[in-house]
Image 1 (cartoon, rainbow, N blue to C red):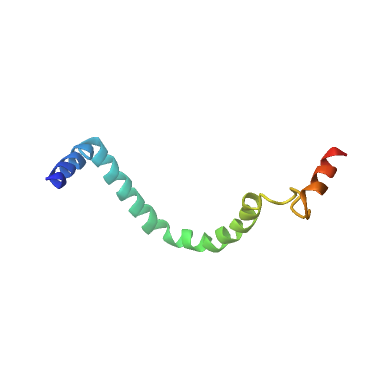
Image 2: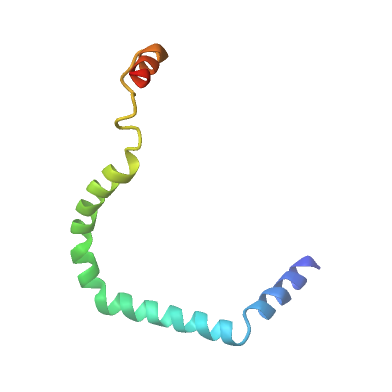
Length: 81
């Protein structure tokens, strides 16, 4: 019984303008992919190379934060000077 209710809720949500918008986005995505597939796939190696500096910038958050100190006393001494 709950499957009928959830199906009717889904049909109510996806009715009218929402369904038309989703169909338009799906058709546009399909045509964009088929017409520009060669261009997108040709740019893929460059995008992978671009990821290297971006990952270095955004994923190396620990650099320069007293990570090399052996104990906490050295860090406190450095902050007090």
